[in-house]
Length: 92
Image (tube, rainbow, N blue to C red; front, side, top):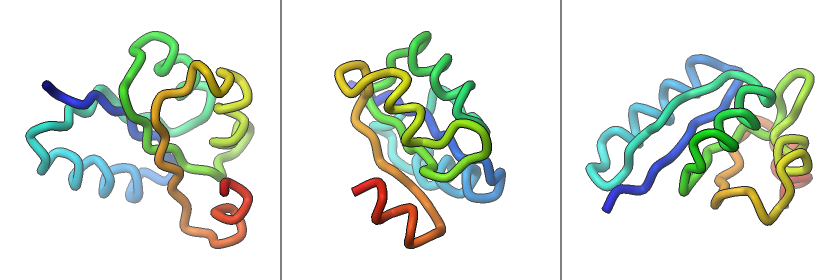
């Protein structure tokens, strides 16, 4: 059984690095990668992944806004990613 996942990060290099690491695991299937919160909301609704790697700080709609838009009950398991310490604290 495969764990389906989405990767959402507005930084293409960071997004690609996460995807590369995930592709090394045969039990994980990357359904897609997205660079903004609106695309994340739409993809989560359409694809119902098991897991999402979600950047906390993105322009317009942040990772936390994605969660608020979908609602906790609709969110798959989520790993918040960020390069900035202050955003990590906010996510916790």
